[in-house]
Structures are given as structure tokens and as C-alpha cells.
Image (cartoon, rainbow, N blue to C red; front, top):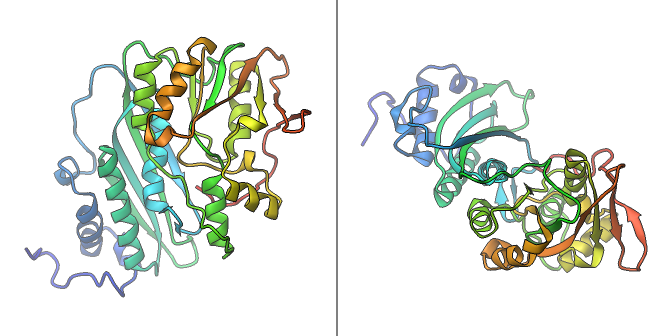
Length: 347
């Protein structure tokens, strides 16, 4: 059915975003209707207001927000659209919460191809639908050519934590086990290979994924989980340092237990990167009492997103809050915080 507000449809194949699309008038309404509402359609978004009206669920609410400025916008295994959905769903889920709703804000540069914008928004809609977490409200701004970098996306999510669940970065205790849900470094190496046009014998795909179903299974199986965190920017090493500092403990990990794909390891060696510091977008770290670790591991491995899970170390007493690693050669080294920027614009 033709929308009588718009005499001509947008040229979604050859057209570009211009300043009128951010002016708040007819052009803005048309961009929202033909690009965003078409891809993200759901009952709450269809209310057409500047906010989404819904009844709050019982329990404790969790809220998280995240900005996404990745370059390139499209990469093996995903794009900025699905990444922005997965990233915020995962941040909410790391509290042991069930994600409920998302909002999305777009800053689009003048001249950005409408075809690429449609592709990104459709990817967001598909990711949100697959996760069962709808995007229910949003905002669009257009900036002048040269004052942006294609498109930036900010997503905010809310969720609810089940009764009896208390998961936080400050709850790791000496003796706890440290688990990771799968191979590390896939996302960062995928981004770098696309950005720098690097060809490898096997294409490395981003691991971007929504982890809330995996988390729900973990929490149902082992409600005593102390910490959950997704090791995005700064990778496994920086995330473990964050948790050690928050909880006032140290951590001891074993290099030989950390899952890393052979192609990722080879690419990092070639490029002079340490995979411990390379970003992930579909993995999580879990810390739980040692006597529950094997049960949690079995639960994680039974889920498609946790089939490569491993116990990689233990929480220890350490007033200096160091993360130390037993190397494959039997030595030991400090795994410090990430210094500087190893891979720019990766999430």
C-alpha cells in the first residue's frame, strides 16, 4: 500500500542520505518509514511515539548502553547492525538477566548510501528477531559530510534478573574456577583481515552472537555463578584484569587450556598480535565456585555457543591483583592490562 505522505519512494539502491533526512520533516519521516520501520517492525515500535510504552516486569531491572563505531562496517561473519544488537544484549545478559527490549540511535553521515543503510538496519532487525529482543524505540541524526564516518549506532537494552541471582564483577573469590565459552580472538582478527585486505588460507569469521540463551542455561544450571563478562575490547587479558581489580583478587590461568583457533593463532603470530588482547563479540568469561565448575562446563558445552568451552584457571589471593599465566613452556608471565590501542575501531 502506497503511503500518501510520500509522492515518490526512496531510491534504496542508488540514493544517499542527505541533510533533509535529519531535519525532522517529510524526508525524515520517509527515511524512518521506508528503512527503519520496514526492517524493525514490532508492536511497540509501531506505536509511533518518541518513546515505547510497556508494563515493567516483576524483579530487578538491568540497563546497559553501548556505542558502535566499527570499521569496516561489513566484515566476515557480520556487520555493524547485528553487532550493535548482539553487543547490548550480551551486556545485559552478563548480569544473569533476560534481555527484554532495545533502543537504537543512529548518527549517519551525509552521502551515506541508502543501500548500505538498508542492509545494516535489516541485519539489526534479523538479529533482534532471532534473539527475541525487539528494538522498540530509536532516533536518527544526520551530520554534514566529513563530520562523521559513515554511520555510528548506539543501542540501549533493558532486562530483568531472576530472583536469587546475584552476578557481579566484584564477587570473584579465591578458589573460584575461571571458564571461557570458546575460542578467543576471532572477531578482532576478522575485522583486521577485512580492513587491511589480508588473505588467509581459511577466512576467519567474527564470532558475533547473542549470548543470552547460553547465559539462561548456565544460570538455571549453576545459580551460584559469581561473575560473567564478555571479553570485547581489550580481549580476555584486559577483561580478567578488570574482574581481578573489581573483586580485589588475583587470577592464575593456563595458556594450554585457552582455546584459540589455529588460523587465529597463526594470523596473530604473523601480525605481531597477542590473541589474549584481541576482541571477541560472541564469547563470555564465567567465574564460579570450583566445586560447580565441571557441572557448569558441561552445561556450556551442551549449548551451540559454548561447545568449545574450557576451564582456563582459578582465582587466587593476591593483594596486587595480578593476572598471571602459566605458559606452554612451563614458565610464568604477568598478563597485564592492554596498553594503547592494538586494533582500532573493532566494536
